[in-house]
Length: 335
Image (spheres, one colour):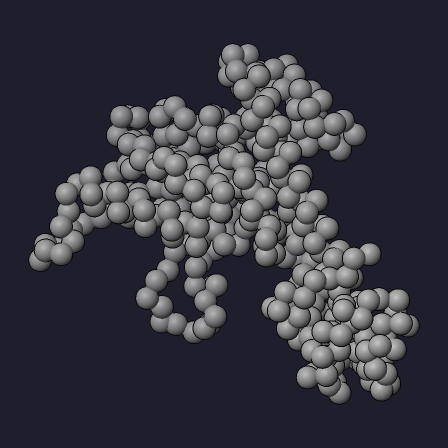
């Protein structure tokens, strides 16, 4: 039983971490919103160029050198890409994330492939000829401002998702994730004032939510805070209603996402607890009908657990039993 307890503890920790990151099965469908305010703030070429310069520590001054090539009506997991653009010899893909997603390199790969396909077509490149065509280098940046604690900067690689850990690999895609929560990446914020202002606005919304205000009131109060300090003053004075709706849409979706993740984590915890109880009773030689009666559960719930657990007896590895049941889509019990 010591091994069972260790496995159970490790499983719970891993599942809790996945829940916080929003990486469990089914959760991506929740993210049906687009981070409208972030896009709106950087929709002007001058502002987007300032963001690019801050990220790359460059000093471009001519916004006409920046060519926006965001693909329209391209959806992946219910969400459009935020923005993509060409500048110099680079193909840039910028995405804003309010919830953590470890699958960002795969998302980026799909979108970059479409961008390159469009680039080849637009430039009339014959990829079947003997000419070695040059392509703009890809740069995939994710601006993260979710509530989970994450580093200032990190790189997520597609190869981290490969089932085979050792290379070499024929394909790689890297997402550089920058934490833009208020108080993080100070140098980046100093280099791009609008990014600092956006970060401050979101931080004030969260501050007022912690005070107990409902979402609409928290957003309204945060906008007032910004106007008093001259933060995004011209933009919010002119586009207050649009900013209000953008934040309500984004933050409501994030709250709903987090509620569903917590609910899913609780259901998984209940299932793991039930498996552990069933295994203890199986180890004492009890039959499924007796176990169901003693645990006051339907036999239809207990029977598949018993059948799966017997394949892992007599040690009853709780983690492997749970994973086996999850792979067969065994439903957690209703409580």
